[in-house]
Structure formats: structure tokens, C-alpha cells
Amino acid sequence: MKRKTCEVCGCRGTAEDMVVHRVIPEEIAKEAGVSDSGAVVLCINCRNELDTWYSRRVADLTYDTGTRWFIPRPPAEMAKEYQATYRAFAEYKGRQRKKR
Image 1 (cartoon, one colour):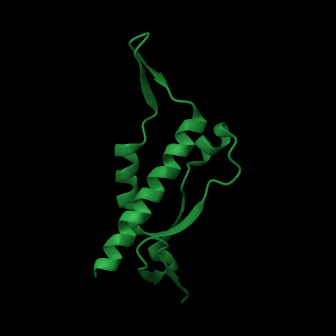
Image 2 (cartoon, rainbow, N blue to C red):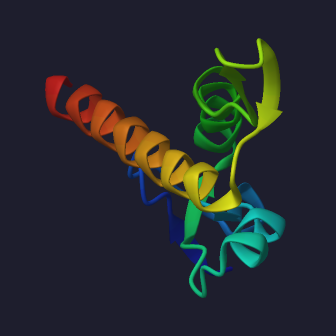
């Protein structure tokens, strides 16, 4: 049975314990014209925690003070936000690993 390592926390597990995750969701990457959506291997725990980070930090709408309406954010802006959120998450998890 082949073992894999989570690219964020370093946990080792079987291929069934790991998932390939795209840092930028494919539909956003396509719309933004990003050719590499950044595939990484994550354990289930990191994948679930990262989903929480995304839901709290990546917004698909922005408030326009001129019109006083929420408007959709451009895909390129969202792609950058997904990348920044993933980097912040990976750095956070890296600091946690060093403390152990």
C-alpha cells in the first residue's frame, strides 16, 4: 500500500486518507484565465480545515459604496484571494508543527 504525506501538516497516510486539492477552484481558475490552479495533496483534516478558512476569508461579493449594492467580485481577484488564503493556512499549520 502506497503512503502519501500531507503537504501542509506532514501527516502520513494511505492514498485513501489523502485528497488532491486545487488551491484555486477550477471554475474560478478558468474564468480568471489561470492555467495552474495549484494542486496539492492534503489529509482529510487539513482539507476540512482549509474549507473553513476559505468560507471565512474568500468572498464572492464586494460592497460597492457608490451604488450601495453587493456586486460579484472579478474571478482574477478571487483567484488571488484563494492563493493568499492557502498560503496563510499553510504558514499557520507550519508554525503549529514547529511548536510540537
